[in-house]
Length: 170
Image 1 (cartoon, rainbow, N blue to C red):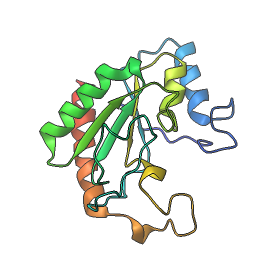
Image 2: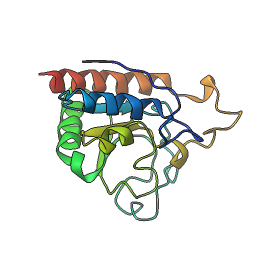
Image 3: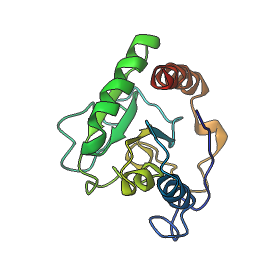
């Protein structure tokens, strides 16, 4: 198990050769490393129990909850088995709403983090996210400050992810 922090995930470097996770994933591929799973922890601290607090790209809107009170485990179609395994381990370990989505990377938001770099190298990868701009009215604004986050729910997500990582490491 490796915990790695990457630089340059945001524009103007996103999905370019200067994206830190892409350089790392390419090096793993060059060395022939066996990557069982890459987990990108995206934003995980914004939650709301208010109906209508959750938005989606148009093609996903009718499939998922309207309340932004869950964590999402998202991946491309090739990562579907990893998503199922992660969602299952999460649900067994913590009482917290979780939704899984295996979707084409071309759908808005699906490839918006470091998991994209691992997909580019043929590795299974998922993003764990509160869905960022589809829920957080402060996303990338000066009002995006620590006091807007829900630390109790974030801690429950971290507990669930501990169980996911333990299962994947087996």
